[in-house]
Image (cartoon, rainbow, N blue to C red):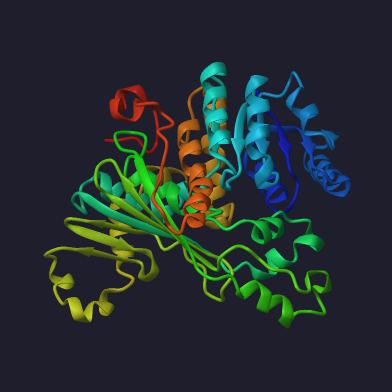
Length: 410
C-alpha cells in the first residue's frame, strides 16, 4: 500500500496528541518529518514516530526545512495560532496539501493572503475543524437537510471551556494562549462553534456572513486566579489581562438568518459548545440534548418540557449521519468523541484523491476572520463591522454538482 508522506509542524500538547492519533489510526500515512521550535519537543516527537514505525523521521527546529522537502505530499500545522497562516501559505507555494489546526486570524490581510495563495497555486488547504465531524453536529446537520426543523432562522454556539490553569501556566508550559489573553480582546477561538453552524446555514454555499457586532465583558477572572495561586505563578504577579471573560458576537447572514457566538474560557463552568439550531418547525438544544418539534404530542407542554430533556437520543437513531454509520465504531475507539479520527480521515482522503477538502480555503478564511473582526468591533464599542466575501461572489453561484463536499447542500 502506497502511503501518504507527511510532515508535522508543532509538537506541543495538541500536535503530539494528533501525531499519536495518526500513528495509531491512519495506516495509509507515513510521518516523514517533525518539527517544533523547542528541541525537546522535536526530539520527543521523532522518538515517538521511531518507536511506532522503526523508522526515524527527519527532525528540525526550522519549519521551512520540512516544507521544502521534495518527498513530502502534505503538511500538518499544529503550531501556535500566530504562525498558522504564514506556514500554510509557504506550504501551498511549495505544492503541499495543508491541514491547519484551529484558531483565529490576526488580520483580514492574512485571510486574503491565504485565499490569494490558493487561487494562484490551486493547492488545497483545509482547516482541521474537528467539531464539524462530531456525532451530534452531523446528526443535527442531517436533521436540517431532511427538513425536520423547517427553515433555519437562528443558530448559536460557544467555546465554553474553562481554561484558567492552561492560560496562566503558559510560561511553564510554553503555551501561546497566555500572550494572547494578555494582549488581545476578541473572539479568539471561533471555529469550534462556527464551523458546524456554517454547515447548517450553507455559508459560502448559497449563503454568507455579512456583518458582526462583538461585545466583551470585564476582564477579572484570570487576575483573581493568579492572586489565588500566587505561589504557583509568581512571575504573573500584577499582570493585567486584556481579554474579556465573556465575549459575545452576533452575526447577520445574507439570507436573513443570525448567529450568536460565545467565548467563555476564564470563568468557572462545565464544558459545552452550546450548539443550538432554531427553525420554523423545531429546534435542537445541546445543553439539554433535546429536540423540540412543533406539534409533536410530547412537546406540547411547553412549561413542563424539562421532562423531555435528553430526548435527542431517539432522533439520533433515525438521523445518524452516514459518516458515523460507516466509521463510528473506529472513530469512537480513537477518542476525543471520534472527531479527530473523522477530520484526519477526511483530510487524508482529500490528499489521496487530489480533491478539494470538505472545509476549504474560503471556509477557513471566513471562519478565522471572525477573530480579527471581533477585535475591531469590541474596540469600537460593539459597532457593526462588515465581513468580507472571500469567495468574491462565488457563494451566490454555488451549485451542488460542482462539489463533492460532505457538508454540501442536498
